[in-house]
Image: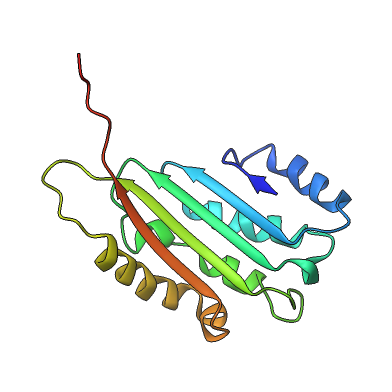
Length: 150
């Protein structure tokens, strides 16, 4: 199942929908734009609304931003998700993937690998329990904006 952005007042409807599911193995969350600290807290509520958390095998979080990721501020509040994904509840969880795509402006350095390493260091501090379980995958990709060819 893939869930897009748009958290807020409608999230309670999404949580209610999740409670009706009989199984869910892979949950993909897709965000476009800046992530706010309360987003991670809302994700904590969302994963707790899953009716069968022990069936979840993979959680994918894709973030696409027009700005280069602001480390570590973009991940403020991520600790809430680490606390929510308890091994006692999410027994089958084998992977938590965080992929960030950001727009590379002309003259910006190519930082895919070094940014991934920086993100991994931040994630290690924000996800200590999941990191200890060795199920965290982090990646970053810089995309170039389309040039106007008129």
